[in-house]
Length: 398
Ligand SMILES: Cc1cc2nc3c(=O)[nH]c(=O)nc-3n(C[C@H](O)[C@H](O)[C@H](O)COP(=O)(O)OP(=O)(O)OC[C@H]3O[C@@H](n4cnc5c(N)ncnc54)[C@H](O)[C@@H]3O)c2cc1C
Image 1: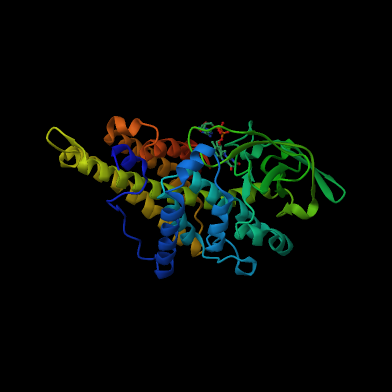
Image 2: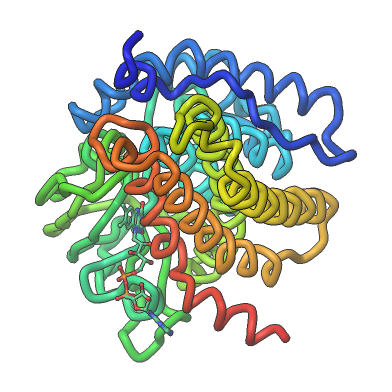
């Protein structure tokens, strides 16, 4: 392998890893090993092609489904394993160590941010109808909340659902929806009461993407996360049966907020996994790259910079695991997940930029993992609640 081939492979030699917290038991360690093997075999060798194609092969969801990895948020009677938040964090961290944030986002939107709404607030009939295929990876799920005019301010969405006999007729648009170009089901937020009702007039619907009136207006071109598909959607007189109303009418906003808890926890796992991976790749580089007669690692400033970044990754990882354990034991974690989301992506931003700096000009070249990781990390400060919005959520609870 020449230098550029070495740098374009996301695998590495140093194996930089942080120890597991004490409450990570044997089952979770086995899960970690299982996901790691999957990432090394299926993702790292192939995902550069997926990035170029802007698409993850369906077969990946099927493999993950066959391994039982898509059902950790779901009950056993529908094909899940109901392993809980800690398991999802292990899963998200190991996927993130692939260094392909687009792959991680697509898979975890499916597992932890969309289909999980069906388990949380769905009826037994809805669970029976939708969950087995989603857990098996036969169908891919998305969550459609954001609109061009309403992102951070979820309560101001305008997509409208109006009751018509046994159906709802939905008109409106959605923006930036992960998995919605190629996916099969969207958990859709729509206004079921007038705009004056704000957060109290929103409901969720389970919408198959082949419903007449559902249209992908465009597949969006992004700065990073290139292998995950992102859609702008339009709904024109889209008729959805009332049996697909998910959760109680006009209670959708609260279901979305509950979903955000899990999403923000997962973003902590991404920050831990991607941060550790960026440091690992950089350790490999600085231990061989020479300047001024010695390796970069032998320059004290380099070592200390990496030690500082590694310590920050360890902190966000510790808070993420502790919060997941608290969630599994039934404690409220809304403030802690907002803390994770407010600080984790800021730490990751510092880590990936610091690591790119240590790669010198090489790190600025397309095709190196660290260059892609810098692009992929950027969205985490915005999506799922921008840093500033999260700081407000923390401040409200101080
Ligand atoms: C690649 C990608 C994938 C996505 N996937 C999905 C998806 O699957 N489903 C979905 O529903 N949405 C998705 N989103 C949308 C994402 O959640 C929103 O972009 C995010 O919530 C921010 O909303 P906005 O873009 O409208 O920014 P705005 O709400 O317009 O905010 C712009 C900026 O203003 C600042 N700001 C906002 N509010 C405040 C405040 N109160 N105080 C101080 N500063 C503030 C922040 O810096 C923020 O970044 C995705 C977005 C992207 C880019």
